[in-house]
Length: 394
Image 1 (cartoon, one colour):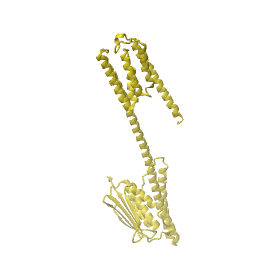
Image 2: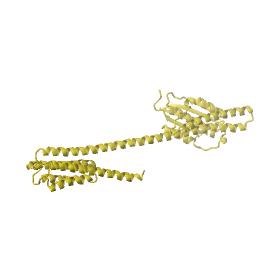
Image 3: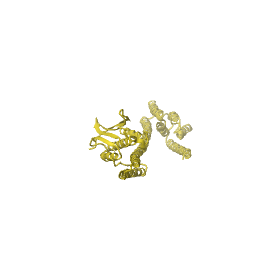
Image 4: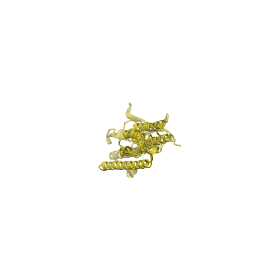
């Protein structure tokens, strides 16, 4: 396509030149017929030259010939045409002023701001010259309003067409910019949605597999068959939950460029989460007062943040740790606090921050909230989260 651009441009220029040549011929013939049909008494200024003089015809064709290059030099050719028009009238040659009218309009259209000024000046000069001819008795009074009308019409027409083209270009630019923004917003939305799915997938895998690994490690250390069976049942339950949620997330990722997925778990499912983590080996003390009317993003993200915090306590503090969970509304914000005493046995999963806290910060930032985390002075680890509630759901 790039190779065709120069060819298409040359074709366009050639087509424009052909149009201007045809226009020059048409204007020249029209003016010629008008001059040949006139008698000596109908000349604009004095009759020092007859309507059929060689000089008059030469000036006529010269004026019409300027139209061939009107797109390339609109202002300069208008200045030349204005002088030729004044000379044509001065020698008494009958002329329709057609070439000058076209050049006045062309200067207003092709010449930009300078061309519009020159077009107005040319219209004023030609009208004033005709008025001068009437004053000295060489031109009829009717020639003054006729010339003024044609000149003014050419000025107005050139400005109008130029303004309409500018408006069309501006409108196209606005539409193009709107389209670019629409595409960019769509891409950003898809990226944000995929990032959200990636965070949810990480939370699902990290939480459930952490429970599985902890229970599997604990099962290896016990000798009571019934206790081993309980551990295995919990492992099965966690694995099934992980598989179900992973299927939903992966299914959303496979739907195409615009994945949509609404998590099925929220702060309304806290009791189930607390029960599962207690079965995994944590002792959890809760002080939970979830306010009503929370927006869905707060409900879902609050659940995931709590889930990840408890998972971190299980991974890094281990079974036997005591965790305090507090959820309440304070000053228009949902405050979530999770603090463990770090007295368990975390050696099954090793240590290190991993991607858990990073994903939590991303979630909190998207909701305009804040998060702080770190070791407690009395031992253990603490996470404090604040999420602005915003407009409530009725």
